[in-house]
Amino acid sequence: SWFVGWSPVTFIILFVQVFSSPFPVCTCGYKGILSCPRISLTTVLVTTWEIILRDKPSCTRAYRRDTNDTRTINCSDETISWDSRPDQNPALQIDPVAITHDGYYRCEVVTTHGHFYHGYHLKVLVPPQVTLFQLEKGTIVCRAAAGKPAAQISWTPGGDCHTVEEPLGNDTVTVQSSCRWEDHRVSKVSCSVYHLTGNRNLSIEQNSVSNFSFCVRFSLYQRSYGRMKKECMENFNQR
Ligand SMILES: *[C@@H]1O[C@H](CO)[C@@H](O)[C@H](O)[C@H]1NC(C)=O
Ligand SMILES: *[C@@H]1O[C@H](CO)[C@@H](O)[C@H](O)[C@H]1NC(C)=O
Ligand SMILES: *[C@@H]1O[C@H](CO)[C@@H](O)[C@H](O)[C@H]1NC(C)=O
Ligand SMILES: *[C@@H]1O[C@H](CO)[C@@H](O)[C@H](O)[C@H]1NC(C)=O
Ligand SMILES: *[C@@H]1O[C@H](CO)[C@@H](O)[C@H](O)[C@H]1NC(C)=O
Image (cartoon, rainbow, N blue to C red):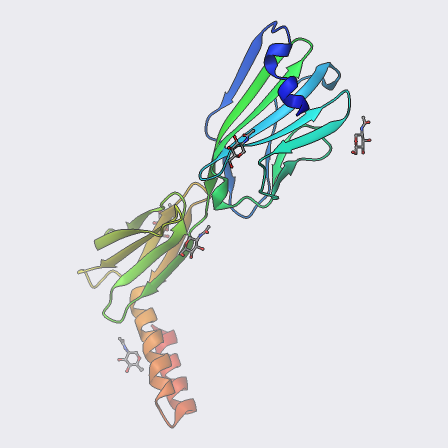
């Protein structure tokens, strides 16, 4: 094809400038834009994106300015495309970003002044689903499900905790921390979840929650449902 013929050796290389942006991050589900080196468009001859994703043949997208022509080789992922019109902006758009988009992306711009490269090792982030709940036996569980990378969990105040990480096979990890507090004066506990997509801080009142679930369960099994529920909830609210 024409851009094989327009390979870098065709041009006199005055200088080669390599920009490196080692770990940009994109959050799953959103739109991601990767830009080429900033170069005056009038000097550009060919812009080429090389996209190397795991388990896929490398995909190449090229734009040749003099003929205003775009070509692709081995590009099967339709969510990756030129950002707008490559004659105006040669950026690459990924929309929406998915977990399969981890990989290496390189923009090469061949100009009348030389070659310019901008390479990205893209890391896709997946925000975890965070929940905090109480098990029957007074154990409180903080769970950060299916995050990438794994979230970190800490507790205030610290308790007797057991934390497990479960890889889900698609590069996401569920982290679950279960704690008990021997000191019964501890009523309110907070779970802090740290993640590159944003930190979360959730709190729970130990006793009132167990009482709340007690109330709900209790009410469901009572015939005099309305009265019992009212009493139970009043008791709950007074605590
Ligand atoms: C396209 O993909 C095939 C494998 O699917 C590979 O053999 C070939 O070299 C690729 N072509 C280019 C130009 O990367
Ligand atoms: C290049 O082609 C696109 C559509 O293929 C067209 O919209 C655009 O006006 C052309 N740009 C130039 C500079 O000729
Ligand atoms: C990863 O796998 C888990 C378990 O199958 C699933 O719940 C989750 O949605 C997946 N995440 C992504 C981003 O594909
Ligand atoms: C989370 O909240 C608890 C209680 O309100 C507080 O002690 C703790 O410092 C907070 N942690 C963060 C990271 O904001
Ligand atoms: C919750 O409230 C109910 C109804 O008032 C009461 O009987 C029960 O003892 C309370 N449970 C706890 C764990 O405090």
